Image (tube, rainbow over all chains, first blue to last red; front, side):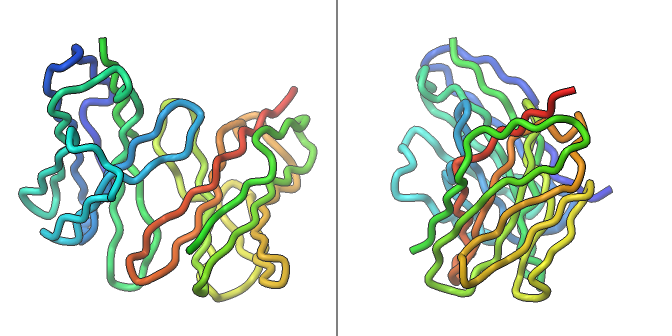
Length: 113
Length: 113
């Protein structure tokens, strides 16, 4: 089945220790998104890629970076995680040929010690 | 500018009784509207979408929603709740050339035995 995959599902890191979260998709979608979702809140868009074009939200901290080496993969890098970065991180994809909904992965739960 | 208001942060129903989750939207453009469901520690799953076709939209798991332009509403309903429906539900609007999503604050549905 075509899908959005996130690894790992649970990630524990230490305060200030860089961490990378991974997203891959078999849908061949042009657009990939990263969202941060804190407890009992709605997802908040961090940035997205339209093909290779990177689009950062204005209020996304510099601590968050992203890479998209090819259509299938997208990475979220947190350079120096703080306690406030503990959250669920959701990856989503969207095609551009008629369909307009976003397909979400299962998320990665990040804990910062 | 667009916004979404979910009128109830928590809804509690008994198993077998109807479900109503309320959503009002504001959009400068002709919107696309979605309902997503999120079970604990899981990603978001699309329940249904409205994209200017039929105003009554049927989704998965027996859910449906009616788009009412005059009331700027897109309420989610189900005739008979099941225990497995207990989850967080998000009403989402997408509009504009950037096709960004704007999430409501979510409604936590509890189903009582």
